Length: 290
Ligand code: DHB
Ligand code: FE
Image 1 (tube, rainbow, N blue to C red):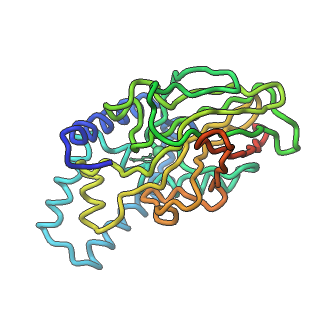
Image 2 (image 1 turned 30 degrees about the vertical axis):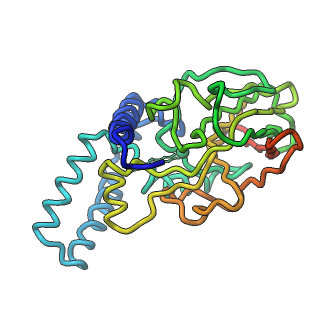
């Protein structure tokens, strides 16, 4: 993904605005209701600690009025471009996910990120994700089984999957891929088995022309996410697993701007012998709902 074209300028704002719209509706908050109640002791503890962290940065680094004003301008730009969901999901969601994961049994998960979309194609396994006739990239099969923590196969399980195309663009957020491209909700068979035919995604940079990307680059940090496939694995009566899968050998593993990669989530797809097609098998274990 490059940053020099007008394309990416419009994409940063488009992606930010759309992600904000989704977050505002609450549709992106799949792990709990928004709000959470306003217990004054908890507000004081959490907000107080967050503010004290910023005050400590000001004291320790002798932040000047010029820098304070630059910070205000930056915050305003994050709002103006709709980048709050992008910024929060890159720099903070992984810590929230760690807290949530501490009470989750079964397969390891990671962050949701800002680019899940509701209402995508409903497909029966084996399924081919919606894609263009000339969809670029290595053909890839992802297959496996959804089971419960006690080993029971989960009939009625679904695998909601979304990822970038081979150029690093998400449909629905970048203007290049058509709506619904490389997104789908796949119904498993009566043994919880799924098989999904898609294209291998590419590493992704957060939008570089918006305030989140500009801050990232101003700090000299890498703006890259390793290539990844997003998944929401669900079954009736079970806690939904939010996860991502990465690829062995990806140059950005261990240096994910969103701090969301985990060694347990790495795939090593193998050739199937059918042209340049590759395949990975991955089972998911879901815990019963409390
Ligand atoms: C962002 C992008 C992703 O693909 C992701 O998984 C998480 C965050 C982002 O641009 O904020
Ligand atoms: Fe992503």
